[in-house]
Image 1 (spheres, rainbow, N blue to C red):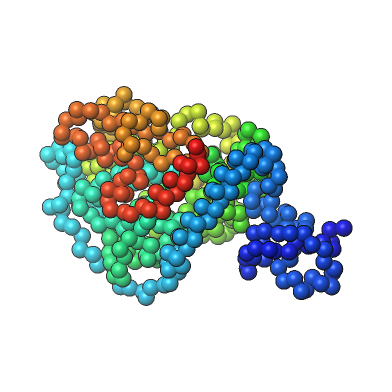
Image 2: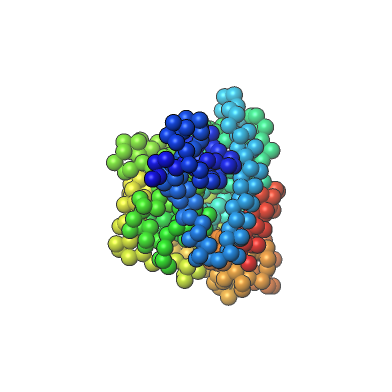
Length: 478
């Protein structure tokens, strides 16, 4: 009879939830229950433990063997250590600063503005380039490519970045706070904010001049889900108990069976873009709060790029910021090799969009908005400018990239050009820089091909937490 058997916590108990990190079975009479403050029924405890940890230990042992269990235990312990190391910074970030006057940073004069490949005349003589920018870098949306464009522009024009400290994001998934910025002091003001964060408008606005231009990027949520599921599944315990080779299909067939909004890193599995924007990712698309959020995003962000129409989005960005075409040059960064991408069937795509309903509604709204802007810009003019951007990118590819295309990690010769890889995989492609590049292009080529982690280090960010996690990740992947 389960009703008279209880688990007694023999290790740490979370005071808020009453969940134990370790249990031993002991019989307890019903009248004794009140004397055991943090005891749960056997059945309930097994369900909670299974839901949060991704399955019982005996199944993992039989499936993976003792060696994988030991590595998994090591991984869990080190992850908790890293979490504890991060906790003081997160706690500090909850201390609200006094409301400060609007940012009054003196924007650099246009005398400092330049382009690597200046053509001798400005393409737009009637406007002044905007230098104060906030880019919300969303996950799995080509945000790394946009980030590289912004880092190059800011560095080239000696702009002031608000950079993260000790890692490559602003302590995501915690909501952004000014105190997370490297070397922040009250009243400090910046030109560009562009690293991963969970958006928090008042805190971001406190760092930038009032005329700052806000932009972000969205992608079809079915594709975001596919990419996020494969990239993060090893650090999302909710996916560990899914059986079979095709875990993604199994999840989409029964998402409610495997998902819990309280699960560790569960935000990677549902409405990730909505979450990045700072909203509740458990909301359904019919909830009025979703419409209110979309309206708030429309009012705060002057431009929302669409990943599937990346070049058109960049041309609109160029027009809005009064930049030159050469400021938009890019190579596709953080792309996965084809074999690691699941080609979704129409049925799977529909299921993924339905499961990520808030993201799907958000995406459709801003896809429509983008094409309204394209119409205002002029379709023929857009086609002409996209062709020119592609021509220049092709030209730079021939100048910069050895072999003209991305290669797998094992084929990248220069360690400093190797991109960050997901746990246990080497699915992210990178590039080899050509030798004997004309000096006119050498700096631009190197920066266009530099991955995010290495670029942030070049800008002076101390990435000790990121590097420590990378070291642990490499050991586990052996």
